[in-house]
Image (cartoon, rainbow, N blue to C red; front, side, top):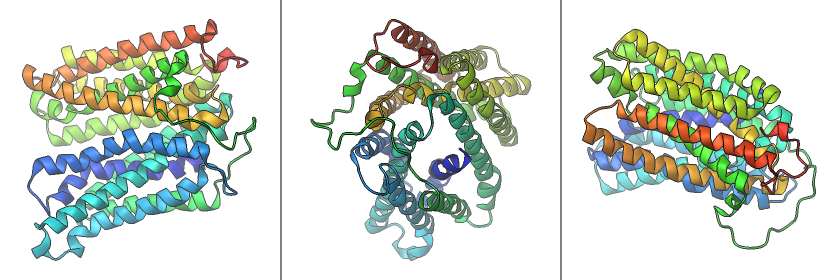
Length: 414
């Protein structure tokens, strides 16, 4: 489990580099904030469109190397090379070329290649978990993955980014190291097992990204996944400004608060996965939504100092972990092997669109309200919707209204 988590985990370093280093690198070439925002937004845009395409194509692929593995063999090395090129671009191009159109085009193309290659790996990584682990193992596998992700995130935050003060390329180099490990695991250790049911060689008909959501349970799963991702996004999008400007705390305090969040994710990832396998993923999911929603309301209405901020941030991290870890077992515990990529594609496309629209709308709302606290209220609203959707998932399974639930132990799903 830890090897598979490390293989996928290299990709999250690219997300960290995109959020923290890409704007700084782009400043070498342009002062246009809108262009820099577009570069950063490519991470979300590619996640919405490339991941579903890669997941669907991996369902259809047949070869001696497996269904999903060949995609990793291309995606991770391509991501590694593009990360290196992006970080080195300010040093490879002469200073006199930095503010030319050619430099901007190169910056855009290399960033686009990096984000697209990354999402090919992520798009195949999720259905791979459904292929490799049984229903009662998916929670533990997802928990171990979240644990490894938190360790990698901590390494980037407290080792790689401080080194950027010495040399700007340091975070990119650290990301390349993790991607090299991911590539090595994909080449040497990744082996796909034989699916329990035979796979058709061709899947007729055009691909429609939302066609799988005709199944009632999958539609509610897509709502749950959208609520989880959107609550996370709204709870963190203006969190730094809330800490520094609204509460008047220092950037050092902001760093301590971030450390509390990383620590809580580390502590609760494995227990959340274990409990998802023992008592069912839906119970853990409901606990996560309740905890996250309560913390978001507390931050929005009651927190005015450092102690309350620590408590609220810790509960946000716990709720986020407990809401995210059960998603993989809920999504794949009863999915047919030949459609796992297609199912993930539908869910990923849905939540990508929802979170993009929600963050834009909430940005305008926060601007009109002249308050960063409204973002937490928006996150709490999505938690309420997520709780309702989680209840509906159980209802559709118990009443047999899901075409996928026939012959599947309901305890593996709910």
